[in-house]
Image (tube, rainbow, N blue to C red):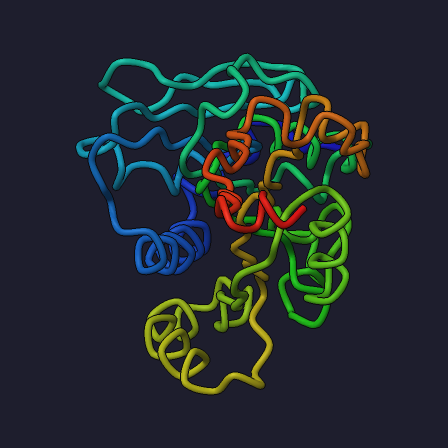
Length: 264
């Protein structure tokens, strides 16, 4: 079940805890994918808090919001780039996207397999997708007061197995949100310290799991007659090739002498 877009907006833009979560995840995303020109960047679910660093450099930025969630205009004070769409039918051409982010779109979907198929379709060759989901081993998935407490949390192996089934190759994974999901002033003030501390300890579980994946592109198969006839007959081989000419110079017989003729 998708969350309401108003609840998501209020959490990320009107609460201190939401701004802490937004900053921690976005910093990690920018570290993975520095803004580059001439690229199309899209986000599905409620990924718009992560798209702002790409507005200036990217060729195009698109925020896809599923119908059950609802849509809001974004970014504020600028030309709108958010679109309301069916969660399994995105208004994008096949292979159109260079960078794709999914946040609050996979774990809350009633049909996650179709969402992954659609993500694979719109991603171009050489493109990358970033899947951001609640971490099953983290604290944030255990509290209903944040958007990460809803839907299906994943472990790293579970998410990577799903991605492989739908044509993705996991490249690298990491976790984020190491500060507790608390509104306490102490935890909010020290959130930056806990993020740095958690990233230095790979075994520490963060509240959010992030998996970067590439699209599998298969080499084209050989077409034509050679693909049908694996062992063609060699009947016509050699036709039209140069044929060696017969030898024209023959050894001449020695003429008989007159004495020999008379003796006979």
